[in-house]
Amino acid sequence: MAGGTLGGCAMAPQKPSGVPIDLHRLNQAHYVQVIYTQKQSAKVTYLKKLPSPGTAPAPVACRYASTGHQRWNRGAWIWKTRALLGHSRFAAAFLDKAHRLGLDRLYLYLEGPLDIYRPLLHEAHASGMRIYALTGDPSDVENPSVVYTTIDNVEGYNRSHQLGFSGIQFDIEPYALSTFANHEQAIYERYVHL
Image (cartoon, rainbow, N blue to C red):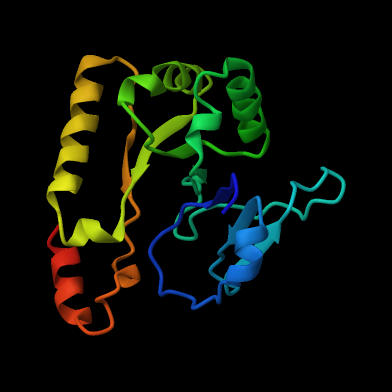
């Protein structure tokens, strides 16, 4: 996806909705919005540019259905993080836009040494935003040492920096392995035991 951002609300686990992904439209999109609610099936919207405020659909209310005092977390997954690193004015404008959209967390794809994220982590924390390290590859199922090394690196960074990552999200997607169709059960077992 060209320079894309994937945004949505974090939610309690539920059965996969089986929403089909239009790969042609996905490859042309700069932004993808995924909306899940408990009362509707998921909806995927592919956008070449962000809509202007007057034309944007109403935001989905993100709240836990179980209790009134909890609320849904809203986040965006940023795959092209280099655009935010080393460009403090752009990063500040991006964080401001994220706040106006009601986001409270960002998942930043790890591209390079963790120290390059320090200025962005400081600015995000100062504005109340939580930052998660985002990484993963289907081959991590076959080489779990990569997962453990990432955990060690992020934990080490957090121990040595007051404002660190709030956590790690692994986007491994084992079904993308070329061997998946013939070894589905074994691959899922390795995935579960990571």
